[in-house]
Image 1 (cartoon, rainbow over the protein chains, first blue to last red):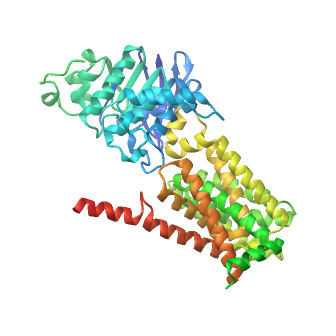
Image 2: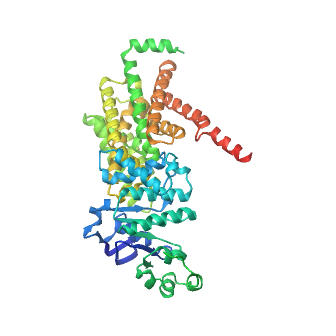
Image 3: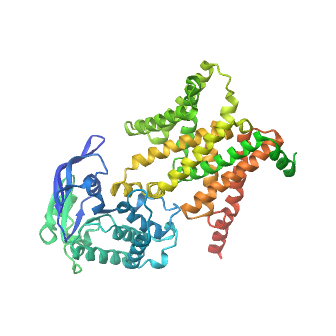
Length: 245
Length: 286
């Protein structure tokens, strides 16, 4: 279980959240929702030790900094240079680097893992393309394929569905559900409130701290959402049928 | 103008010319390889900064009578750390921090040269004089070439992933600061080895131009390193020939050849060249 205790993160001495504690269960897909700037991505980065923080994060009792290889992190795509001279296959192969360690190059076994992962996200035919030659949805599937080869216990995805096509979104959700069913913890920072009930088992609603956390059926209520977003969204969100999980 | 045949004849007879050619080609290869990582990491300005900032290190080493590689490396690392420190502990952006730090160090180097009252020819440090390469310079350059090749072969995947996706590298536990400062140390060594051939002012051109040219020709990092170092070596060879026959300073001659190779590639490179883009536009119109 991924557990965060008393986590505080501040940018320029302005706290994003203070003493935040939360845990993410195994075998569940947990969505993290909240308005822009609520601290969703910062929670992930703080838990992974990617930003300055106080407090601690542990995975099954061990400090996250000591078991990083058990956690796969799919960052928001915006930060990457898509003109970089690297192919789709090579990007997926970088998922094996953590376990390989220093001075070892990916061998036959690692390449096979990368090929299998590309097959799972239906991108085998694009394996030799330069990374910038893909659509947004294909690109996101590449990074999910990279997470597959990491063979991690916990997979964290930051806004994986932004700007991608429905086909890619469905394929990524299928991979996430497969991971969930095999007992992994899946954490998804998400912005589209319409999909919450269909996609997630558990939900963490944030706005500079935790508004609510628990099973979607219990937590995804008009009151909690309105509280987090400081607006009454019930007419848009709660009067429609939602897809089955 | 001396013909190629006469140049080849001179090469066979004059040791200084052989040394110059070997040094220039080795520098072309090393700066082509390291330059590829510098441009891919968006650190061209950092390359420029380090090359200028090692000047006080060169002078201090000269004053103390130690190997200039040691003095330059110490100053190179201090500058890289200082730039990172100023950027991290102020509201200034990285390029501003680079501008402040490197100009201060370059000025310090210039003042130290005048204080040292050395016989060092400032013009040669600034613009290079490859025809005066000594045997020990040649050995130093060879050692730097070996260090660069070993460094890149040993840490290829770390250099690749930190250049492409630094956050991902951090997320799986790679110490990206060590990779960064390792690259800065190697970059400093390359800079110092290039002082003799192209000089401090133009080192950045040898780091950036062949790598930028290679970037236009390929979508694979391994190929880019090979093409970049090849262009660096070719530019060094032709530049040295022009320097010898036209009596030009070696640095500007080599850099001009590198720039011409870039210009040709900019027009004809099949994937990203000007003609290729023009073709794509015409296809869209049709």
